[in-house]
Length: 267
Image 1 (cartoon, rainbow, N blue to C red):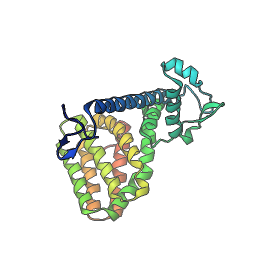
Image 2: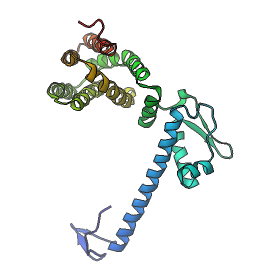
Image 3: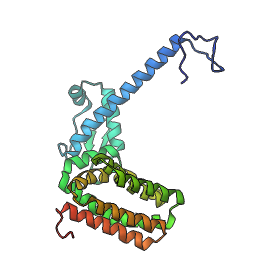
């Protein structure tokens, strides 16, 4: 919506556009937008807090959740706000809610782990050790294939993007910058695979690897070795060598396994 400058009324123009709304009406519209935004934020906060409690195991799969009145008392919110929060959780696959029956927690296999909130709640609930183990399992089965596809289907622009990520990794002067550049490289590789069915994995790539790299970057005394392994992946993708790309990614993941294990067996 085009905001009215002070003093402009319905008979005036602004940047050549006739304004058909008074300042008073415009201010009322802004107020209504602000109210709607606050309502959305409240609904999301209710969903967030209940979602955390579900993923932590406080409410097990199959368990009945408190009713709208009980949640309303807990949050100091209206039944409408609670109902909208529950709709958010239902869309994320955490619960099923039916009129006159109430809401129940769905089995974990129904949870949408590709949703950023659900993934974060789940990761916090299972603990770092289990989360890292699961992340590495995911990587071993998915990322070598992504690297192979990227070598087959990448564009010149995508190769250049990966090169920029590598440069950022080399130049990074802080822990945060290293993690950011590393995650960007893996997301760039996913993009270079040019497969629409893989796109939803962008959430998992970003969130799992951000958490993993926060740990491994600090624990890795030979980070430059990891940069070198990323360079091997980039070179294989650039040269359109899918087998080399797959092997380079497998080598990178194996190196991460060594870092996680405390460096045992690392030369």
